Length: 81
Image (cartoon, rainbow, N blue to C red; front, side, top):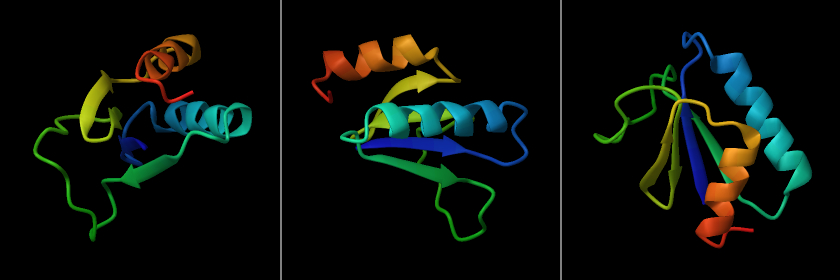
């Protein structure tokens, strides 16, 4: 599962949401969870030091927003596609 940690106050929050929406639309077979760290009930993993952070099964694959092609390439390398 791809987990994307974001925060509403993050300056690139809107871009993160758009990238995730494109990914969901073009590759619905990839399970994506978006976690908003501004939600008071959300626990932040110790490895998440900034937003956005993209994690695949608990492993950080990107700090910050990658390009869509870089994200798809990385996911294909770990056999998500």
